[in-house]
Length: 116
Length: 112
Image (tube, rainbow over all chains, first blue to last red; front, side, top):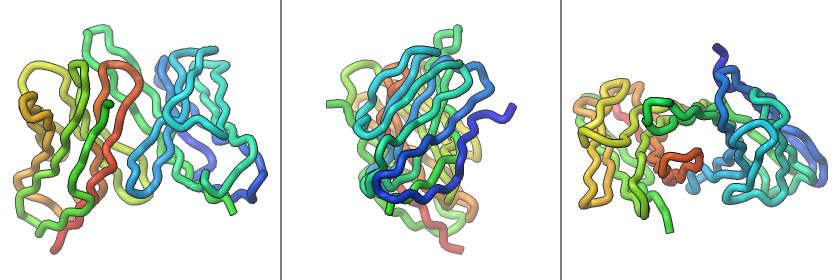
């Protein structure tokens, strides 16, 4: 299994440009999430999905869109990039074990985005 | 409000010394608690988790953590630190859903 994969690893955008960060998982996880990581702020939830066709907003959703057409893929779209969106973006996926244990999130390697 | 506090932004220890990283949480429901480690330029790797039962949890790489409900704490420990343990460590809490709350992280530096 490849686990959670993210592309690209690095990206530089100009203010106002749009782009899509790709995330895919091959573990058949129901839940997928996008986080951004900024120095001194830990990870903050942008959007999440509990299954194909179902998405919802997290803590910092403004300026980002998501969709979930398949179980495997959960792309994050920046509609009009702003310097404040310079960050490292992590995608994560999780399962809910039938044994009653809690879910564990598995993280991708991240995308480092710079907006000029 | 739900929150996770990691009071130490940076910690420096000598190789072979013991380590304790602090994590305090504020959570209304029964918490599920996690410690993740992030090496430079890498994603987050799960070290250990607690959801019920024995309050002392063993993880990978020789780490352990103890859940203390009375103190709302979930501190991470390692008896003897190795140079390869230098990384950033994150504590996280969830109520059993997919929505995690992360602390701001503690960056560990190991002196040779």
